[in-house]
Image 1: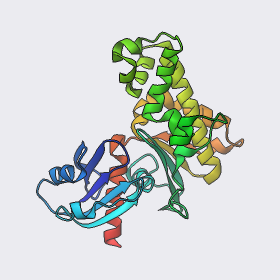
Image 2: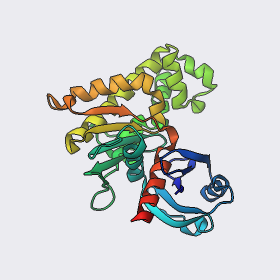
Image 3: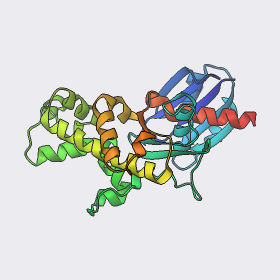
Image 4: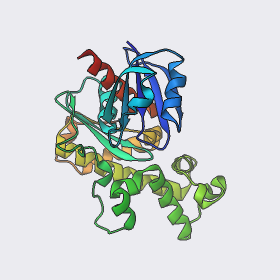
Length: 281
C-alpha cells in the first residue's frame, strides 16, 4: 500500500509518496501543500495521507480528493518514526532524533512508540536552555533554535563579519542578508577561518543538545536529522565528541549518535508511515 506524507514543519512544504518498504516513489516541494500533493499523486487516489506539523494541522479538506484516510501528527513523531523505520534508528525501541533546519524540534521513541508528552510539547527541543545569557531571540524562538537553526547559523557568521572579522563567505553570498547556513558550511569546507569557527560552535551546541536528550531518555541512539545532516562531514565527529564530554562515564559505550541518511524527506516519510499504520490498525 502506498501512502502520502506531508511535511509542514519547515518553511518549504515537502510531500512524498512512499511504498510499503519505505522507498520514496515520488516527491515534491513548494509552498502549496495540496497542489504539491496533487502533483505527486499523479492522478491516483492514495490510500492514506499523513500530515506532520508543529501544531497538528491536518489539511483534511484539501486532501480529501487525493487520499482516503488522513492522519495528522506532530512533526517530531513523524521524524523519529521515519528514523526507526528506514533511517539511522532502524530497529531501535528507545530512540530520539533532533531535527535541525528552518526550525528545531525533537522526536522521541519510547518502547517502540512515538511519545509527545502530556500536552504535545515533549519535542520542543528549540527551547532547550544551553546558555544562561538573556537574549531577545532566545525568548522568541528558543535558545537552541537561535543558535543552530538555518538562520541561526547564518546569523552567527553575519555577527562575526559585522564585528570586523573577514570572511570570504561575504564575497560569495554578495551581501550580509544573503548569507545562508549552506554558505557557512561551504566556507568551512573551503578553509574559511570564520566559517570553521562558526561550524565548531554549531557542533558544540548540537552535541550539548544530544547529550541532554541522552541523559534524560537513555535511548539506544540519538539521530541528528534535517538539513543540517547534510553537513555530517563537518559535524558528526565533533558532535559525538561534545556529547561524550557531557554524559556520564561509560554512557557512550552503549549510546549511538548518528546523522540521518534520509535527507529532507524524513518527516514526510514518517508522516506517511504513521498514516499507513493507523489505517492498518
